[in-house]
Image 1 (tube, rainbow, N blue to C red):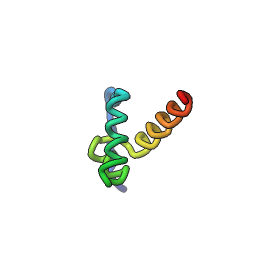
Image 2: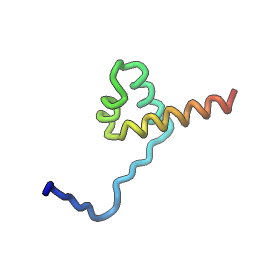
Image 3: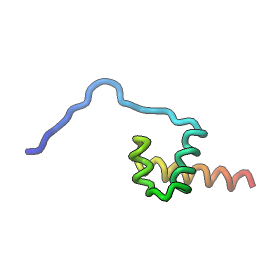
Length: 64
């Protein structure tokens, strides 16, 4: 059987400001790195970056 790790206590949940999210999205767009690479650098899941991208694209369309 493989190793099982049990985490106790409060979950680690960070709150990212819109400016931080946009900086990470800009890094993805301009650095030539993959989303997975940028996500690793910032200790976030790639799915978070995709969700942020979608959110900001929707916000842009709403403001047109």
